[in-house]
Length: 167
Image 1 (cartoon, helix red, strand yellow):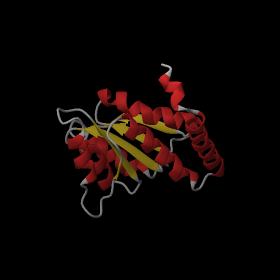
Image 2 (cartoon, rainbow, N blue to C red; image 1 turned 90 degrees about the horizontal axis):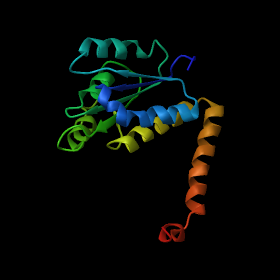
Image 3 (cartoon, rainbow, N blue to C red; image 1 turned 135 degrees about the vertical axis):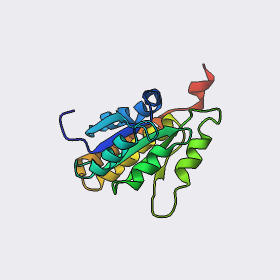
């Protein structure tokens, strides 16, 4: 993608990409300029601070941050930037993402993180929410989003339970 990124997709480790690729794929589908990087709150805190502090100046309009376990990445990112942060909990421990969900959702007043569902559905929805946010000032993107949602509606309306019963 040649355009400067509007959305940053960050994750705590390379293994998180198995979940976060759902966000990247959705952004690609809408043609939204983005970047994807590993930025660990625990292993590379200086990089996290640098990334967050430079985000607005680089033109990022939304950051999607995925993390598992203690899941400090979304909250720390939100603490260091005014760019909206959407947090995606990742099932990385025996608690299957509940620990990450609670960590991301329980932000103190003044440091908001938009908290999504655990896993790939949450990552895809984070990208869709980012698209909707960007579409408030981009008519062409808004048209693509409206068409995409209409296509999902039409898929539901055209399917029947009889299609499933025959399988």
